[in-house]
Image (cartoon, rainbow, N blue to C red; front, side, top):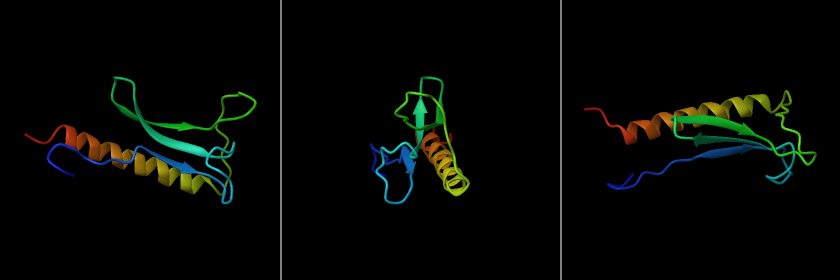
Length: 85
């Protein structure tokens, strides 16, 4: 962190080994803000256009870890933006 800037991770991707990051099984876990405060968003992109999140047993622990990491990042971001008085 410098005086004017801070570095933050805003997304992680959980995907099958050997598959590209844009495959249907890839889950993006990201930080978003629509004006009401930071939150974690999970998304997948399916060719059929359906909106759903499909999670397999083996990927669940990684998705949980990614969600937890994003919430930890939100805490860091909020601490930088509003330092204690």
